[in-house]
Length: 395
Image 1 (spheres, rainbow, N blue to C red):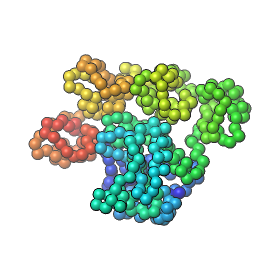
Image 2: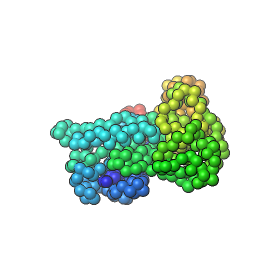
Image 3: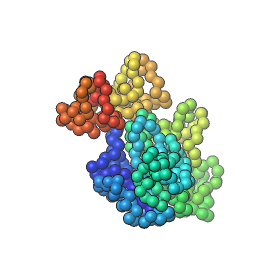
Image 4: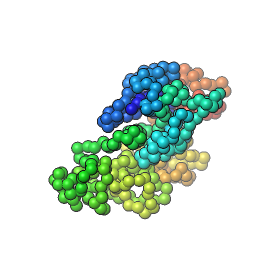
């Protein structure tokens, strides 16, 4: 079918923020994609399989060395975004239609990630050419860039990239299989069964030592309808039972899943959901005893909100991010009130430095015997720009 391009690598780390280094995550994503496409019988190759430096002049040639320049070759370039936004993006080349990007967008959304847009971008100096070299320099191939989320997001992208990157990659795998017409099969465990043509609840239950009622109860099924490719659990949860959660205004599947230490796909499976749509008052099953909003955690401290505070400022003080603060405190908005008591992670032993006239990140890093990237990551800085009076945490 084509290539999976792991962006950056070696001396080019790409985006670095909130403990996320783009070159490392894109390699993990590409390795996962490579293995899953192999599982589905879709021929594919990776442009890099280790921490190798590939320049913009070398990478396109490497990508086209596997399957050539035909228009039947799909090239997927995996990336992590930066710039303070939130959500996934897909960029497709000027020579291609938006069909594949549209499918990826739909499946990303189903996996719990909001998709900002899928689009084309033209080179300002020559609008007939693609802006991005990996699209421009891979002629005839169907080349796309997938930005899985923003490493410097103040929304939920950081947690999604760290905890749900496999779900997001699986969404792209599913899209590729759908696009090329190969039957998609989700990953199944020893305790699950993937429905195939001709199956019935009765035959599946009989073959696995269950009654139909037991199988329906385990999977929260309200009728006997099955769909090819559907994953059925064969054993009830052994993680301490379940409790229920009632959906309220502003809730999302990702927010609820994150609160209970689940992935969106697991939460949907537990509740037999086929879409991400929720309704106020809807009752969901969640794993009992896994909620992170217990208020009692030996690794956490408390912070009392004062005038002028906001979640971003408090998160910076405690070397965390806004989405993590909201998760710890079961917050559905960024609104704070003076005197409010927040759970915060234990603050690490860092120094605070106030930027003065003439300072640069390089000079500060040198003075404190650290690196520019370490300071940028610790302070969630997307650029090297500083302002006088700005406070920096220094490792």
